[in-house]
Length: 429
Picture (cartoon, rainbow, N blue to C red):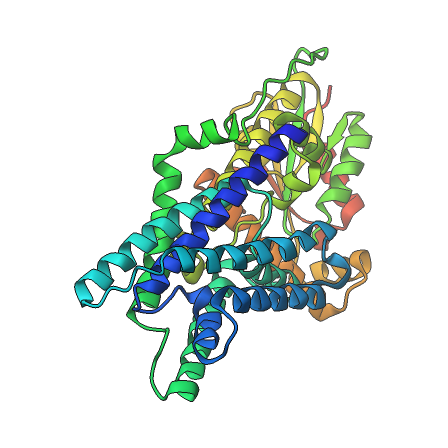
């Protein structure tokens, strides 16, 4: 992104941060219980001298330090921006609490109305922060760090995190006041409504989003570069179970046939297509997971909805790149759901490689220098991601024989023999 676009996004983010803090303050002033993420700081502020904003800063910094401990060298330097963001957020909260000093609803009905207004404000603040797409707040970033460290699903982990924050706040409240103070019906309502509201803003304000950002996010740009096109290119796609040696087979097959080979370099071509970094493409490529809690959370969390949109746009860009490659030269393409993307392309052949679990574990152990247990866990995780990514992106089941022309057990035949089998099966010039 250009410096101008980055500056624009940070301004939008700061505005969203203020709106967010105003929403949190409005919900808190309704006196029915604050939002889940603010529940612990709020209960502590009721017991001790520091304000809600100060406790929010302390709590956020603690979450950032925990991220550093969890991720170690994987913790990115740009994530340190969470520190100043947390400080600004805490200051904003105290400022908004002062601005709303007049708001002290007594009747249950007016408290309920105040709560709903606060949820709408907070929902709009979350929507604004998320579309800015520059800094993840410590609460969300901590959950992401946990998923990276322990290889858990974001949706499930986020639900557990929010629930645990509320439960701990309840315990603290009972210890301090012998009753629930600062946590209540409003906490539950905010947890349910804010995500729906933020998601609604994201869907209804598409034109406004484009106006704020100056363009449609992740818009696929036309590739004006031209390349000599073969008359009738041979295109071979290889889908594979993780650890079945698909990459090695693809490279050997391409070399034997004397044609081009494409795998992870499609990520680089995609990054050029959407004018984003390769890291951005990698982080949004085949990372969808699927579970009951994930589906439930997807319905109520704008962060997850935006993430899903990013992954969809990356897949669409990859599909465009793959179709252009297939139309211009003979090649072997590994992964990227290329068999679905190119299912109607003439002179294309789609291969699925698989192997028994013990063979895959041995392959991954040797290649990635992992223990048997670590290799097995990695295989299950990656294959789960591939299945979910395929289902969400194409609406079809990954690995079903009807979507492939050939299926070979690489564990039974070995990689070199598999290449020979495929060479014999494929048409020769």
